[in-house]
Length: 117
Length: 107
Image 1 (tube, rainbow over the protein chains, first blue to last red):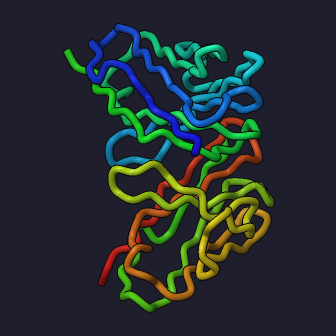
Image 2: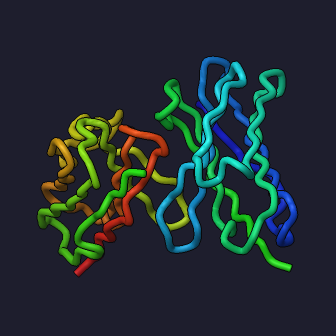
Image 3: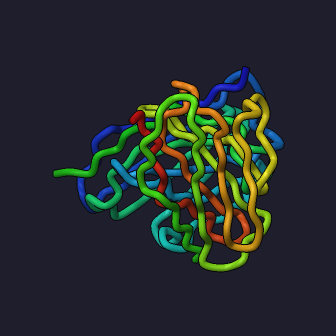
């Protein structure tokens, strides 16, 4: 049974960097695309981007200048960094994996990140 | 960016009734439209992909239809566990986008 778990600080100060890690268990991340999707409170999900197991990335152009994704296949993890955050970045952040770049077969439970001073 | 407009925003129905949800895209996205169900505190769950294909394990009461820029999700007979928020999502063009959602609530 493949499971995903997001981890990272739940509170980030404005202008700082949000960092999250997604740990995959019950299966290898190799061969999958890892994606990040966020959902502001009471709003619709927003696709942030994906990283392939090879390291190739594709980001939502609305966030592209602030986003960096990386992957560590030896640890079965992939990560998200979002810099220069503001209160508009407050959201539940989900990681997900899929066999295609636009599919999400498995999801994490989500991690609430609040941006506040 | 492709904009997805869902209607109605809220649908008030009783168990056993039929639910019809609409999703309209700002341009042709056929057939790359998916439907997700989300319950409070949970991640979205894929119901339908490519407009009309049920995902693994999804009951037959859920069906998707449509083409071009207009799509429909139908729940033939609402079960208590179907009361939730439903989102449509397109993968025709980057960036991938979601609609604003339809909340199906108990009348």
